[in-house]
Length: 337
Image 1: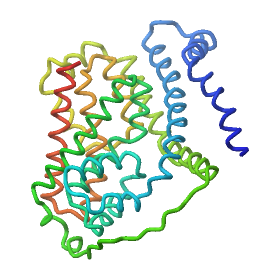
Image 2: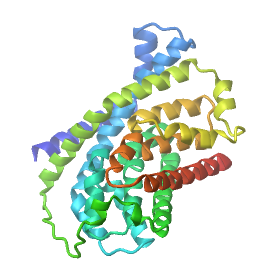
Image 3: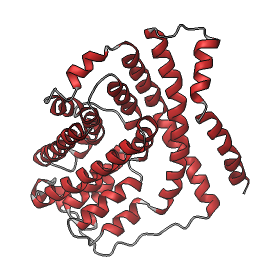
Image 4: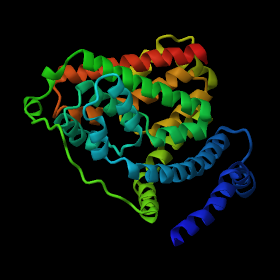
């Protein structure tokens, strides 16, 4: 159990660093570098130096924990759990499983085909495909670290609601005719067997560490770039400019933000720091989060990948239904906050 001992010894170091980041940043910026307080450049550099280690420390801790949890939920087990589930209750279960099941855009087609083979309804499948990229551990961790638990919980709840309702609506529209012909011809199997791997506690720790290496290794550059952009916004963009363009008074800002986000591609690690800077400069919370949701949930690469199994009318319906849900949530956020 050497790894467990090492992890337990690392935890106090993590706590010491995380809760003293502000003091460390002040020392580096004002004492070591001797930068003048209050200038645009100083504000930009301070934001960058403070936020990069803060976000990466949060990611390492939470991804490790989620990595262990995910050892209990493989894609095959998810498929088995959803097999035979009817719409609505199936949509709820599917969206929640989307949070903890390993997923990336490249795995969208294998998962989709596996769900079709298991006879899982189309709407239930879409609830999973919507929730998995949008309501993931990286998004929740970053929102928690940058905005607090209330915003993270609100994002989690509304993200799940969008996935559940959108999947349910798509299911009710009976759009199976817009699957590609070769997908419709896949033989349905009622009882799909899978070999469940049983891990020891030490193996689960190893997989948690592997998750940190894999996920943080993939997203750290997005984190740095996103925070760099956010730092520039924080230091140089005038407060009134964004308040007028993305504030509550600009009713059109929510649909415009969603339309702008759909063709863009980023992950949560890259977009959340930008959202933080936008909100800090006067953008309304609902507008900023609607932009974030559209970038993550309706990414162009995933649409291109899904084109291999879905015909264009179904893809456009998917974008329209999910986009409408995101716009509604954005308006509600702006009304409440």
